[in-house]
Length: 331
Image (tube, rainbow, N blue to C red; front, side, top):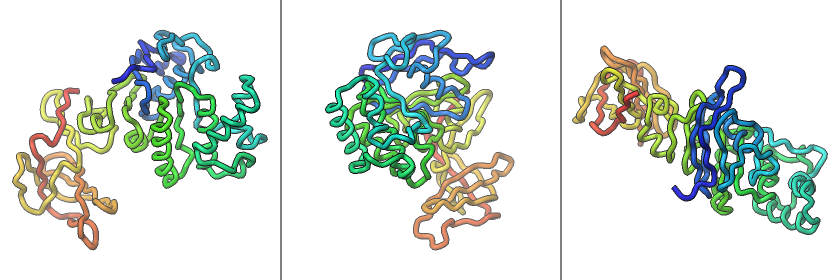
């Protein structure tokens, strides 16, 4: 990993008796798009707010660009934060919303106009500077909020569920726009999300959080292919988790299993009955009840099949997988 711009050391935060963040150590590299991923209540937003300075840790340190920022107020940190609600001022136009922070800092009027025009072009909102937020679509309001965060040229941009308010189709397109923008600017983005698809498709690295702790950190493909625990294997994507011994399990992804009507020539085989089928366009996801065993999920491509899935409910089928298809887990 390149030089870290953020280093978190032993960070803890409790709300009453509840440990929201419990002894987190983390490094985030300069120029990467890093995601904090986890379910509701896992501590990811509290951790983000401590980086921003909106929450004070009980113990531990937040170091940003080599400086200890643990007791520094938010407005004195080289950080900007884009909130989930966007928090746009309804009485100001787009240009006024973007310029607000610069005016508060006393930046010269000519420089404000130049920087607002630059960032409007950057987020593809040219010509919309005089509109009010109520006159914009959800995707446009999202870009105004992003422009307002970028115009102050922070070293670190924190984004709390930045795409949550968008519909699915717009969210998918906006992901790629944000990745391209982050790469072009070379800024460090830290995104909080509960959406694993969002994190996997955008982040260069991510941290999966559970109960205030980081369960695993790494690139998306590493967490998917080599989960470190049953929690991560189950949280990232879909996995069949099979117990193979005392305190030993195997995580087996549905697409790593062969589904056929005849016994396959693989190292491991099982037979069972199809009990459910979910048609997903290019593939079908089967639930197969194994004889004297668990129900397993199997993904099969729907290639050149006029009616989608090749098998029906009630069919007896064979499953097969190779020795290296799964990931052995010790916890």
